[in-house]
Length: 155
Ligand SMILES: [Zn+2]
View 1: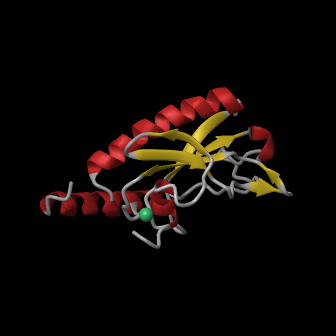
View 2: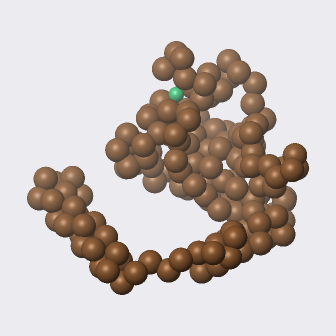
């Protein structure tokens, strides 16, 4: 798409700090990684297919491209682990700002976010365990949706 930032990066119309590139995929540094008090806390690499797909991973991206993207992400994550020595590399797909499918790889360091990674504590030590009722009802809704999707041949 002509007005898509990531398409422009993929076509080398806009400079990026590349870490990996193939004919179909590109991995490059996120120029807005997470920060805290002005310090970069999680170096972030973005993995994109060069071809444009919308950023709703489960709706917009063909399964083949989706799976290949994870293979690329795995390679890049291993290199990030070795180079940056984080506690580990995590990934997230949300794409709410740039509508071009991308996987975000974060190098995470525990010292920057104590308890952030533990859902039992939460970032402010105030996490609340979900009630059995909420867990049961939410799981039921998802299972019912799966049945519907199977009927519609979407799964
Ligand atoms: Zn695009």
